[in-house]
Image (cartoon, rainbow, N blue to C red; front, side, top):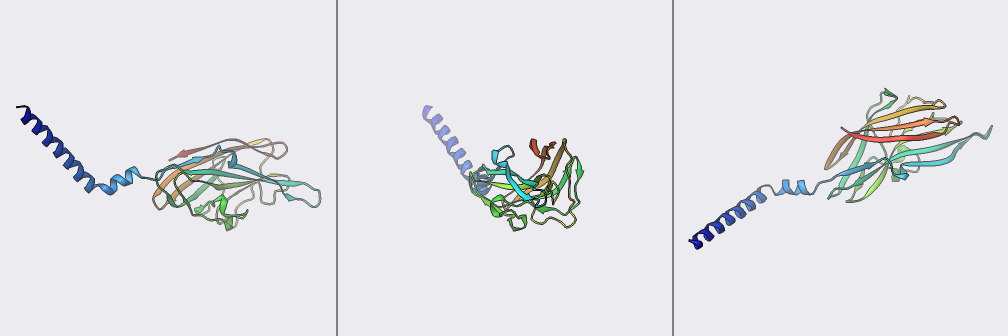
Length: 214
């Protein structure tokens, strides 16, 4: 009797293991893709997300100067595999909930791929597992010499006719951008929101920034 019960248990276990083997064989690729998948984390609060360069422009007549501030996001691959050809598309930019300019969607450039000119930067980048890189979103100009206005997007091609936006003293502004994150094996959408204040001395103070995935 005991032997019969033991034989039955063994048969059940063998049948279960056989079923598991069949399932694994049939859905091997799906299982691997589920376990090994890319995943990114976007950080807007890292100390390097705000990079300031003092006195980038100097007025030869009165000695006044303009500081340049890069606002960038930190992108980290926290998944189990590499993310290939990742690029982040800017669909629109709003200032205080109003579209700045109706330009065609364009791509932001990676900080490590240029020396100041966004046209020289690269749109695509590869992120290995646990690797991080910074992506430039905006240039802010503070001070009295604002030849390009107070803000420019760090996209590959800034459209002709993009307005020179002047910030007013002691006023708070909300800048938002709808983005798409693309890669060979990954896609995601989000809204990035930045709140700043232009001070009495025309300095740019960052109040708050956040990302909302859509």
